[in-house]
Image (tube, rainbow, N blue to C red; front, side, top):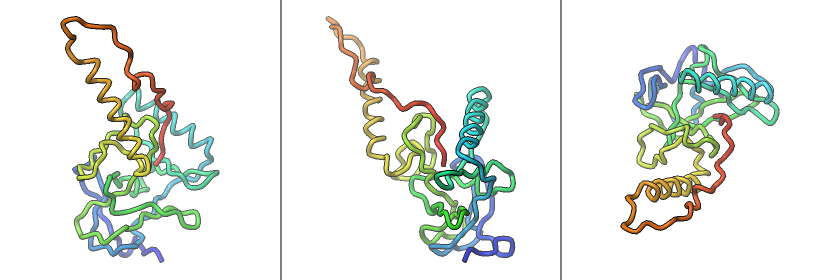
Length: 200
């Protein structure tokens, strides 16, 4: 059973070295513990897309907007963009100590392992490869892949990064004494994912 957080909270909000504010273990947390519920408004997929696109447009203009849309099921998402949803402050990590679990229509952040008091809580946001370059990761873990991407996409992500870096190196290299017309690198012909808003 999830704990009564009002009586015995597992967490505390502090400044994070990853990004802005984060959530930290207020005491030792055992593996499997339901730490905090991800709260929000249940919305349809259409409304979720509308809100997400609106926030994306705002961010492109102001550089200051956050999206906290969480996939709930095939028909609905959860919009957690509310001050009373403390769980929205949990940062992404490529080596997370928590995971998001959907149970009976509610989303819980659950400990993957023992978490020591003072350790920052994190989970993998599970973004796909669309617009991967727009989501750099700052977790600083040894296994960090540099971008906020679900682990299942890491092999493909590494290929995309290698292609990008190879293209940059080729097109920025100094010309030969007798330059020849070169074909565009294969990576420059690659159709990148359509720009849309990934959801955690």
